[in-house]
Image 1 (cartoon, helix red, strand yellow):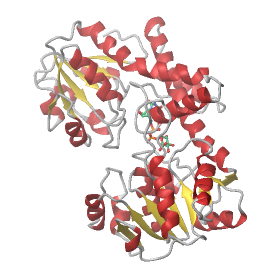
Image 2 (image 1 turned 120 degrees about the vertical axis):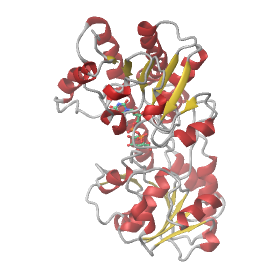
Image 3 (image 1 turned 90 degrees about the horizontal axis):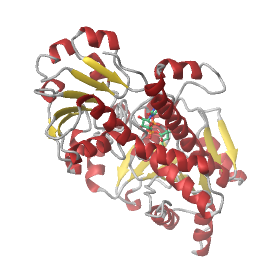
Length: 426
Ligand code: UGA
């Protein structure tokens, strides 16, 4: 198969590179010249574990800045451009429409246009009508993405399902060829396909908000949130994933997609009360976290604090809608002084202009610190020798807001530890 991916963000790059690894001829187009020249040298513009080996390897993977440089005529063009949120809460689809029109202008009418970006229901149909109004006969297909950042390579190779929205038999056959190595394709109409994506992300976000609020209850009445989630997850109807307590869900997908679905619900006069509550719950989460800190160390003014973790979750350099950043922002507003360390997300955070001191290591970050606050669940934060670390801090207090540390060994190393969803008797 000959495939083109428009946009080399997380979705486009990983899907394109991985389909090339399966044998397809793939060209990734991005108008960002710097990104393309880095990719041509085998360098990924994003931190995604495992992706580098697939970028450097093949001679069937091309990177270019426009259609003129394409080495082949594609069977399908995948649209993997951004759909940023509008102020209204809806999604900005201008990049999707522009990219689809360009695809039609530069390919033959047998080339499928496959929308992989997360888009509201009805978008593939609207793009189809738009292209027809311009005289193009290309078929538009929906094929939403379910890759997680940081685990995208694994997820690509082990998908729970591949959802494809089209009712055209020729388009179905092409999509079956593209995904010939997989046997879990779900064919449906384009609108249902688009909705599966929004509904899946919103449902997972709902699970997280639920467990975070259960944790708040545990903090008041006792009980252990980690055992509680395990107990719930043992029920096959509930399932154990996405029940891990934390500082709130972030990233470029959940917050945006849940807002977009909620906006859609309002637009069609079907208020989605559950989603509104989840959005509100997650918005309150950073404030709840800061109050937890204050309940132990009091007023934050002038206090030196260490933030371990800036990325919205481990194994990524992405800080978009990161709860870590929101929490640090509130601490700064309340007069705290923050030194931060993250194994991958420092560069992006520096570029964001966040007013913290950046340390080059955990050891450097904790010097004279009155409390260490773990905000991202990096393995590095689990492995550190806290006994040694405690020698450089001003006070020995850890707020583990990802519940990743073993309470008794941390106490043995001389620290007081506070986790979410438990009464912390130090
Ligand atoms: C999410 C979905 O999981 C993917 O299936 C989807 O393809 C992707 O969005 C997308 O729409 O592109 P991602 O944003 O990479 O993937 O991150 P997740 O691993 O889902 O985590 C999202 C947020 O929830 C993170 O802030 C994470 O820390 C938080 N989380 C996750 C929890 O607080 N608890 C959990 O149990 C799980």
